[in-house]
Image 1 (tube, helix red, strand yellow):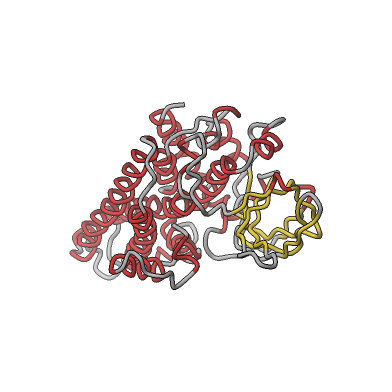
Image 2: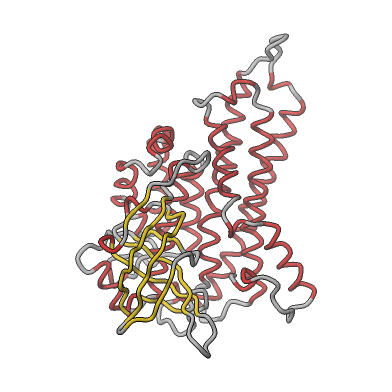
Length: 386
């Protein structure tokens, strides 16, 4: 599938995704019909290796697809991104692990919970995992999960590792009762002394793999993952702006019935909001075009570009949050009713901002620190996750 086909297919799906947005929130997970639409449209195959039926497509086209879906349903765009990114992450695992996931079912999906919340112990031929991991978006639709853990061995530095487990080795615990991104089904994963063979462990997955034979999988994990949870916010902001414009055209003031469309504050919010959304998207896309051109030509992406992508991501989420908060405040009393989509967008973007990798304070500090001194020592473990 070409990029034009990908985006065309997504735009055709948008009306039905919009109609299901309230149901997605009520179910607290992606509706089965939406998941099936994404599967049948080939959206999850975009990052899949060609050798296993995928497209190995360019990253920016996928993020643009997320933005389109994000205009009508933040939760659906979030799940598309998270599951799609872990299809990409499988390209970092060994061939034996990939064949185990996709050998019999090339449409199998992988959810995740990458914060190292559980216990990892070395065992003959692999590792034993126990514990409870939180925030596994889309886990109801995935027969596999990738869990983050740290291997600690005497005399060796700690090793961040991603462990791949099949559904029979874990339980899904329904903890997902939330006010924003309710439709993502980001439930907990419970593991009770499960064995993970060595071939299903991906060590130092945060590091770039310059020797990977396929350019797509030489991308930095931090850039790929961050972008997948920032793109929905750019789309959500654009969707909120479109909703606000549509509603404002016909709204009348409650006291004197004057047209809200004549309100200079509403007009200014639309103009400034359009500039913010356009600016966020342009910066996001320009940096990714630069990144992909370098990767395709065999170059190592410079740290400045990797940090710039991280900065663009968090600033896009911050910009989206400011805009939807402003539009929500200007939308009048009817905005607080649950059948008004603008309140759902406001809640969803607030929830997006709460993801650890969307923490703008840490990332802007990090960018400024290395801008002043490129050789500065990291202040936070997240400084290297770019």
